[in-house]
Every structure is written in C-alpha cells, then in structure tokens.
Length: 148
Image (cartoon, rainbow, N blue to C red):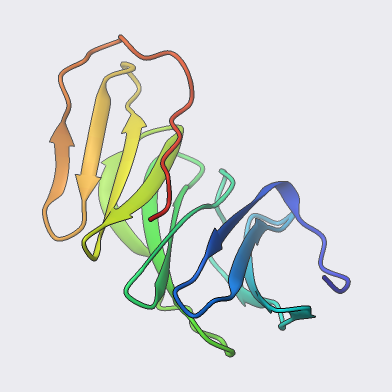
C-alpha cells in the first residue's frame, strides 16, 4: 500500500471494473482512495475536506460512493470514478445530521442510513433526500449496509 497512514478503519468495496477500492481517513481527517487491480496498488488520491467518521463505501454505475460525517455530525456524500486516476467528484452536503452512517447502492442510486441526535432512524436516497424511517429508538447498534 505504500507509505500512506490512515486513522480509524479503512473501507473496501469491489468496483465493476474488477478492481478493489480502499478508502482511508488520514490523521488530519481528510480522505484517500486507492485502487488495487490484480497484484498492483495504484496511487493514493486525497480529498481535502476533513471528516470525523471513517469512510463508508458502496459501488454502482462506475462510481464508488463515499459517505462520512463531519465534526457536527452533518452527513456528506462524495463519488470517486472507477479507473486509474484521481476520480474524486467533490463533497456534497446531504443537508442532514446523523451518526453513525452506512451507505449502499441499488439500481444506480445510493442510500445512506443513520440516526439523528434523538436516536431516530433516517434514510437518505440520492435524488430524493432524507426520509424519516419511524422506528424511533428501536435500533441501538451501528448500521451496516451491503455494497451492491
């Protein structure tokens, strides 16, 4: 993996291009993404916005989607284009607050799930926004979403 040092837990997902993508959060809160194809590691590509949570990944339509939370638990989404090169699209504010979060994809859209400060469960659907799930305070464990 080279000399890159991450903080927290890395995230991994398989791209439709047959490569594996690994994301890390550096000690300063910024992120890095690298591609592994066969036995070869690609370069690490950084993204400058500092986050407080570890990256969560899901793949769809030639993109690797990333969900993270900043220092005030605001949820952000980003995308990384599959292939060799710096494919970051840039952070997008989902206009929601939740922690922790998990991300998954289905039919070309990404979904984020998380709990707000009242422990209420919320879903985010790309192109739609946040949806209240209604199972208030029923969930106490961290969410896990399966990349598709």
